[in-house]
Image (cartoon, rainbow, N blue to C red):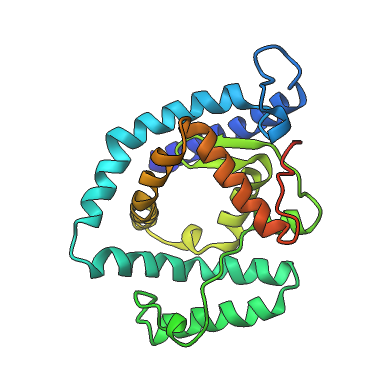
Length: 246
């Protein structure tokens, strides 16, 4: 029964992505095209509905849980974040290779080895103290390096801000590059994924004050922050918004 439910959720997510792709192609239909289409957001109407749903879920469930998690003794939240960051080194190294960034391959491989051993499974970031700074990479960035640089903004239910390119890349990145599909039993996998989500949300709590201070529209702040951050990684010498197509 659990496996059937998981399959249904995956199919639903894929259908949402397919729908968003179709809507991008129909961005001239009234009610879909928005005033922010030139800013990389032709799906603003759909995105705002998803944003409202995610925001309601966050305020009522995710944020209170994240605050409770952060209230635990100091080493627990920090060590948990280090542990999951260490697991993320695996897809990071693979994407470093796919992009031909061999200096990053060496840096991130050493980080994983050192933190997995001296860092006791990654709960301590020993590598950072050895002048091996953290670096994140994913398949969405690999697609961008391969030429798929421009992509429309798209908010994924529960997961939050993304683009069509980054959202599509999440599926093979998860199933092919991360350790989670290989974790058995399934209950252990879902516990780890849930804890990872809580830890990630807890790390974002400190940024909420900034968003509330500088933005009268939380949706616009989240969208612009995400697009500018991703674009700065993809085009470090030309950090302008190029997310305008599907």
